Length: 267
Ligand code: BTN
Image 1 (cartoon, rainbow, N blue to C red):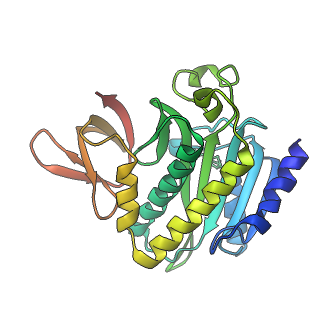
Image 2 (cartoon, rainbow, N blue to C red; image 1 turned 135 degrees about the vertical axis):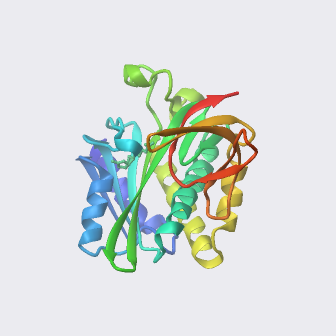
């Protein structure tokens, strides 16, 4: 079964009809982290569009140093190497377009609508189903490579989720009540990401921001953002033209955040 997964995933290279993504697809049965391996390839000058998939990860990483639970056979753990030739302050667009691509895929397979939670969690029924970890590799003065890592809970049952995640996480199988083929989900995600990335490179970030905003239920809610050691509370009102989350503060001023973590969500 696992070997089938490897050959099926690697066989996607010939099925995908992508411009940027899938120049090479490598599937590992077990690895520490697909992001780590993609970054190693980046340092060796691998081609843009390289995709690394794993059936399981022993040290899957999330944002803020968190662990990403990555058991075999059930989840999707995947990283993509991109070389968009952007400046640091434009990188948030890559994170946002990865989130847009992932939510389009999730909504294609889910019986329940998913929502984006800034900066890039995807929730169904307020439980996390997918997380994205975008990391940069500084190469020369003006050149940045980006690794997009996605972890998507596909066929985990509630019993298979670790105790500490049972209340906060979900999977497509849990919410749909039936399993979903991981391969078709991967194919959909890579196709969406290729299209969104192509459109971003050619037309800029406006449409990414619009699509992101159409897929969140955050706006109008009072939230708290953990930003460094500070916790800042305000009402989420929009993303600005740089993709930053804008909060309306109690004093009537607006403040824009390009990083942080939402830690509280009052309804
Ligand atoms: C988060 O929600 O904090 C981000 C989770 C990202 C997990 C994925 S799984 C594939 C890739 N490899 C990793 O080590 N992390 C990302």
